[in-house]
Length: 328
Image (cartoon, rainbow, N blue to C red; front, side, top):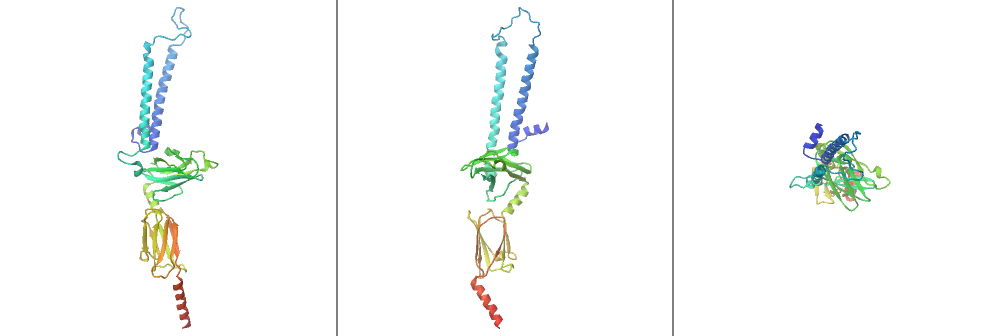
């Protein structure tokens, strides 16, 4: 009972709050109306039951004759009036509740701007996710107690993205985006399903919503935006000078160069990134000792090791010095 009272009186935060409140109100009113109607029906059935005491001279209606009396139909109009008030009130109240589902932001705020935005794509009987910063996890991971705004689309046929325990459902239509939101307050794992018959493997088109504590989510997101690089020579020994590394994001204007002095024993960890890949990674020699290296489509998180090969001139010079030393 206390749970029901709390649900009806506490401020709404999630879609679960909205739809559970609507369900409880309709259930309560439906039960109340049902009790009144059944009680009144049983009362009249008992009151006007056939006791076998009716006399021949009693003024009874004949078959097919409309009944008269009833105080001018006041009871009938009263019952219709009360029913109309209840129905109209429910329609207005429910409409107001559903407006909150459409846009839960406070006045002057944009719900989408304040939320964690994720693009969801249904394709090949699987769901894929991409955050605003380009991170693409295998499962949808969100922080508990924070609003999540999803833009849902499809890469092949019609699907329907649904998280039943969070009261979420959105159509995934090729070439179009359907937007919705949710807020999960309790940590745990929740099943994501497809609710549109989409082909042979429709029933296997499932994924997982992982709800974690905000601190854990922030730590995980930082890990997704971390890149580590190590420089070695052909003998797998660390190289500590003679190069610089340049990171260039392919879709933004981010470009940063890191000199060998910023490496620690030939290794560097870059954790101030704002976007995941793809990146172009270029290792440029600063003294002409090594061959340049270019890598494209490098995504975070990554931990790559580059082998620096000496260029032909330096290699020949080294061999010449070695030969001269041998002759002496």
